[in-house]
Image (tube, rainbow, N blue to C red):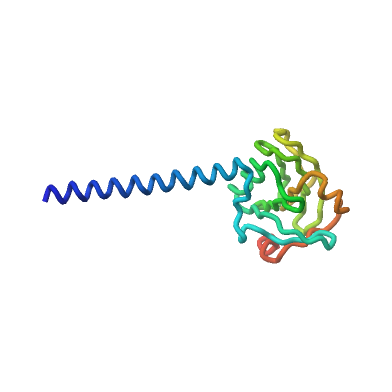
Length: 168
């Protein structure tokens, strides 16, 4: 009986060690991918939108932890890549560039899809870049992207229904 209990204890300890090792490896892989600037988003984390008949597919951050991480640790981003942030409620919003290594522009967007501000943000600048009015969305793209596409304040961002439905 004692031998069976010792064997069972040993098996439980080994299972726990394997589980812990697996979790450590997964965490290390995730942190490593972020630090290398790799896109760890899956297809369901992408959203298609259009501005002035220009269609793009960007990463979608609608959860607090996704918004907090944003585009941190990226060393490069494709020309038409970016991230759409959706906040929990309409409010003044601000962004900063902690641990963000590429220059970005942020377009603040109200609940109706209208761009209210486009502001440049410099890498690793900890200054808060605030919206001028309460907004619901922010779209970060490579610096100069909006200007190169002729997109300006007042233009409308057409968002998919599943993104808009919570804000109606």
